[in-house]
Image (cartoon, rainbow, N blue to C red; front, side, top):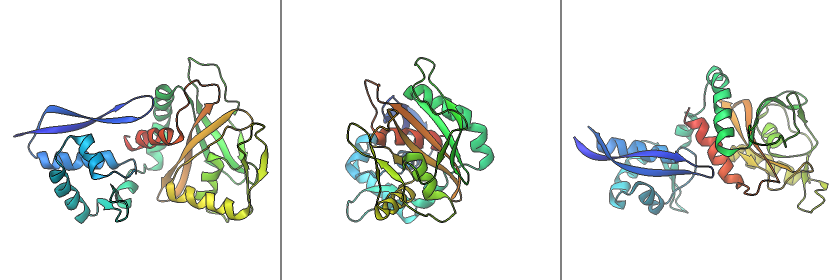
Length: 266
């Protein structure tokens, strides 16, 4: 057996770091390294060769051979413009959990995210009126600052925020009319969103499979959310709610990364 590098993840409050351990042995070290590369890219992000070399502490020449092989097998894609690598869509789709599994694991998933972030975690499901809050997990060490309660409905054709935006993007019925989006001013006034911009937001949500609010709403809350899909059918939306009173706000993309990693690790 050969000395190989085992990639494992250390999840912190702000990001997932990939570290290297040198005391593991495998019968097929190249296979272990290839699977390690896939695990790094399972969050859907793009990585340059230099970034992958830094994360794995492996020679670039070895990584290139592994990446070329993974590309031939259609497990990895390379953008010819940015020269960055990412998991192919076919691999990412395998992260989707069947309905029974996601429902069974939902309390554990939400509790884990809530503990790691010290933020409220919410689960919404789709109905004809809007997105209904069905489950919520609140940090025990903080005052309740998110007012939305179980049964609250984020109705269509009102405010366009992270949860409703994903609801529009993945519901099967026809999209009609623009929503409203919070402005950046201190009063947090609602302004009418032009239909062309509304449709652009929906298309971006469908393409990215995540949305995070850039600004706090009138209640001082902003959310980051991802859809949970089963063959493109929307099972529900998992969201993290953050209050403006937090001394150390977490970037929206970092919240999204943790949500995605939590689902992919199930």
